Length: 90
Image (cartoon, rainbow, N blue to C red; front, side):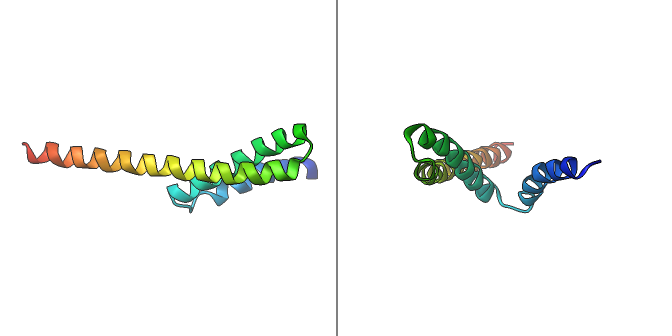
């Protein structure tokens, strides 16, 4: 395996491994931030300022990731309440 192949594998494996010890909230915030930054950089590059687009996109992505996390936590809480109510009805 050449050094280029090794670096390519490492570039893919390291970010995935870094997320393994994160909480779901941290994972969703990171995913939203990186996705927003990437999308913002692309739009910003088209508009003429990729850095500003990435910064704005990262902020919007972080907010979106945290909102999604709040939704998933509320969904899990409702599910657990339903499981408890169902087990008490037996």
